[in-house]
Image (tube, rainbow, N blue to C red):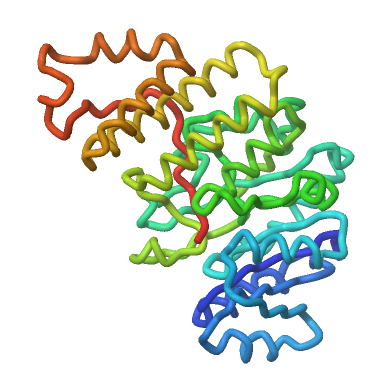
Length: 326
């Protein structure tokens, strides 16, 4: 038995839920607690969970979203380590065994441990680390400052492959309600920037192939969403405010990411006809990254601000965390 509580938030995932639960109970190293938080399901989720009576803890709550469900799971967790699994995914048999070995091999020094993930065909197939270009230096790659990892173009972390110190989750406030799409990316930044984190080699989780990605609990977010751009700006502004001791190179990367989020909001509002909001976000982009305006002017053609197609040119100059939870 491992010192781990598993939290599985679910909402109307009855056809897939049993597979997820079975993957936790069939681990080569068993968790000491499995909690299923039913976020107001209207299908036969309760019936399925009752068939595991005595083997899992089943909690039903009014629909409040993935963050509320995960936070409730954290509150109910009895063990010092907490792992998350989405009900539409499943773990490889030795996932917890590998995590426990990493914890023991590093004396539990990391705030959280994470492994690789097998992606669905809709997200490109292969693994997350192959997609991101992330390469651990050792089977247990412990870093005293995970800032560089957290500021990668796409973070090499997904909740389904992570195990967290419960104390750290409690102290951090868990998943913040103000993030509807990027609560996991925000958590990784809050826990990983300037902190000790460990990458554990191997695939720990398999993502379900699902043609309706918008129905996934955790999946890719459309970059065209205003909410996505707003949450990106909140995430990077929070990172700058929270870690004043961040090295200059990392701070500049975050400033560039923040400027990029404001720029995308600028373009979104321009295309929507909200000229004042568009210019407001353009000014914010320039204020947080002075070199941005110079770069933008160089990229501009001789046409006027409103004469280009869609109003403004597309750019891609910083990292994007394209992960979200319903």
